[in-house]
Image (cartoon, rainbow, N blue to C red; front, top):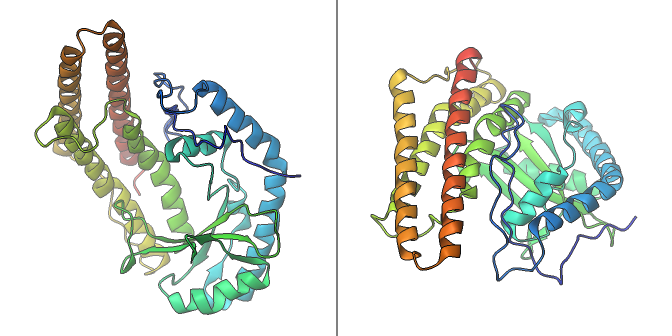
Length: 350
């Protein structure tokens, strides 16, 4: 089966559809619809593009699963051979989400503007000491090559990224891993990238899953706002709105994400069972909601100026009114869901 990505006159798609879904808290249909494609992009209706991408992905799913099974066979063998070095592979866990979903795939293409989806097939292995770079290069990668997989290349360099404390750059959330992408060594046709994430252990994997559902997928939706907050002049309403978004993200990351990952790393890497509880004081909650209120006020102020500047265009005024309503709806949604996340951790101490 030949698998080729959909192309539209070889032009990347820069549309802005989105699904306001925080799989963690509840399945939810988007409360608002995104704006149409910009005029300087390929002229297809965004719903048609999205549906076409996802339909082709579903048609290719059976073949993707075969590729994933073969890749997992190789990982299972490598983990067995290197078990003495603290390598383990949980195939049952890997099979939960071995292939990127059609919706996630099309969303990633929309956000990146590229049809190259590097984590189409993805999985995780555990390594007791991911900081051992010598082991990675001298033992693990040669073992993978013996099983038929080599690192793909990005700008001529091996596609491997150490995102560890002291090696590379951990995420702002405190999340650490080693990320690498493989392709089949001998295949000339199948150059689909197989993403492999190396984590400290199963507790860290569980923390990653929980943080993604409860925090990451939620605050990432700020990127879907219609209002452009990038490179806003200092002191402008857009600048202030963006500042409040950063403060909200920092609160969520410092009080939830980092504690989740630190607790999990303590268990898997340091072998410490003690945990730092995830909690918000009444003052913490009040501060967070104050940030959201200020964000909504600054957003309203920014749109007020935009409407004033566009008062001679009826079409522009209609669009701005819709965009403002959509943005305020989204901000309220994120606020409500983040409060629900806080309640979750109050009822389920980590």
